[in-house]
Length: 594
Image (cartoon, rainbow, N blue to C red):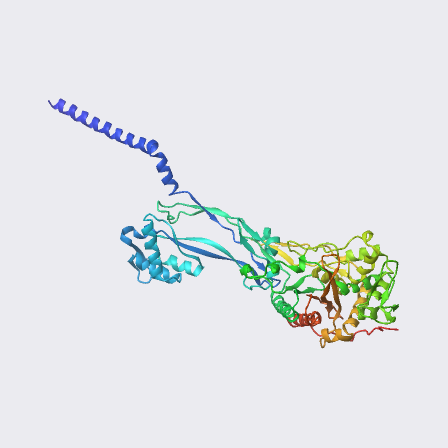
């Protein structure tokens, strides 16, 4: 009897074990086969989520480290509407001030959130309720986009479990339109697009994204302590320009005023370091504000200084004089009996800007009165092929490599292609074109004892790890001898002290050097316009040149002398900014007639 009872119990136990095993096997089959796809999807939503660590675009700074363009890291604050209703809209958090665990309602939390993000509480609460009314399972809505770091910290301190945050980046130009013509801009249109320095230096400014992984719950919340950085992000490098922000600002104001006074089509000034070729200011009227390109005139979005060459006119007479002197064909006091009109060979005729009897001028006098005829009579003593080579050494006919994305080469045909008329006209700045940067570069060679240093705008790139790359803008070029450059400087100082030019450009205590230009421009139909581009190109102090300044005012409707007076304003601003000491000695007065 007892044995039968034991056997019966054993059978029951065995049966129970078999049943349990069968249940587990069935459950395992269900999990691994029947529900495998569903469970895998749920698991994917809970663990192993990859998040991009976006690289921050690098800054653009001026020569002193002042920030011209930067990237602000902002944040989008988001919430899960459906999760605000969990636990009957109640959650608990630790109150650091009291040291107690406190109960918080959804409405109270939304009120706190709204105060931090500067949004009416009633509006935010209504937005959440409306979202849930439309979709009770809604898991996403924005609370506020583009909040700053301070707001982010305050929100996180609230300890709200259904809030999430995402980093976003905003390109900012803290000085507005200052150097906007150089910096360019960036915008999103089927991918990022750039202009100006933002474009030319994009490789330096762009970093490399990293990424991290984290585990998340079924409702999309990141699980605390689960983040793992898989690849560290590398932020973009810092681009340093040669521009001086404060001087750039001052010169832009001068340029804007010059255009306003004259009703000109455009105006621009350049300030260059005479010893290094570094561009300290490149100012254009109504420069674009990269923060709001839509508000700018589309014609002002680029940089005319680098991309729009024009016939320079009489400022190039200084180059012709330098060639003749350097070739031993003339000196500052070389004499030339100069008529108003000259026909040097059949089919070639040109004249001076105003009628005059045949006058016995020296080369210094020819430049002082800006005689086309006198310039060609002396400059023509130099073979045209030699003159062409000089013009190339002065930087004409070849694009500068200062650091902008597009820099025009201007127009300089080979000497073999010059017709008879052009061979003469080029000597006084017609039939050839240059950007204002190229003109400044040519005068830099004269100011720097005959040695041209290629113009530079971009100084260096400093990578995220601190590695500095200096940019090479070209090798120095010996254009003329030191003696020739000194003699041309004497000639141009006499020009600056002659007639009405003196009244426009004179600065007490400072000896300045320069040449006027009133240049005709092509009308696009084979002729010339009836109005002009007025310029003044020069450098100072004459006793030891430090800075080159070129001003150009295009097609002024009134007050054509502003090119000289605004040049003087820019020189004064440069003197004040860099605290340039007064000049030493008196200038060498040259005979203008004989």
